[in-house]
Amino acid sequence: MTFAEQFRFNFLENSRWQFIVTGLKNTLLISLLAVIVGVVLGFLIAVVRSSHDKSGKFKILNFFCRIYLTVIRGTPAMVQLLIVYYVIFSSVAIDKTVTAVIAFGLNSAAYVAEIIRSGIMSIDEGQTEAGRSLGLNFSQTMRLIILPQAFKNVLPALGNEFIVLLKEISISGYIGLIDLTRGGDIIRSQTYEALFPLLAVAAIYLVLVMVLSWLVDRLERRLRVSER
Image 1 (cartoon, one colour):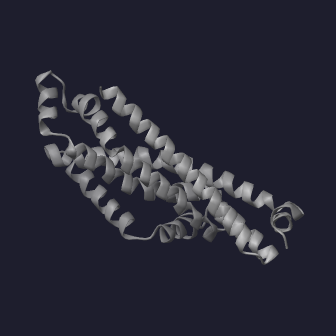
Image 2: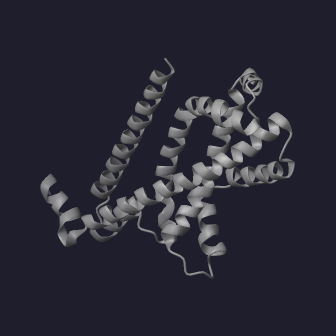
Image 3: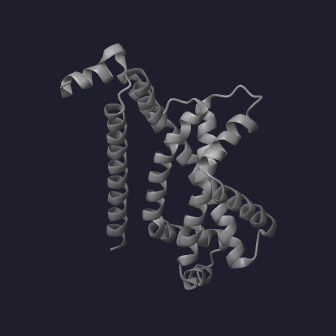
């Protein structure tokens, strides 16, 4: 077959392209919501952990945070997804997309927490002392002085984590959810042609990662300009 015939056979016949479109929509939706969950929860964990490291506060919360980080970072994301779907929500009628958002959000939060915590701990202690000398309390010092600087330091690492999360969602097919990878696999199962569907999926992922990398780089440059 020619390239045009292969393309028509794999994507246009029986409107198989819809599997790719549906999978792309689900992938983007899960990625966006999981990032929000991961950033919010990860930020809270990072504040608890760094506050404990700096001032000795939140001992009990820090203990549970350490357990959470150990468990999440020590087990595969696919196993966590299966546990959330087949164990935690096995008796509840819950949408698979919601399940994926929860699973990937909890997974991402563990890595985001440590990234943000490392950024907070990288700020010189003199910055905290300067905030205190201006009459700011601990929370005000963190919010107005420490966190803005920490965010600039960890932005590349956060961008990388979001890229990893985007690609990690490709395992959503294990719970029967049509993500981008699963959409390509459904086409392959119907046409018995693996090359075109998989190349299309890979190309879309590549474009998404390139766009995300460009956005992170643009934000990083803007933050550098604002420092001058």
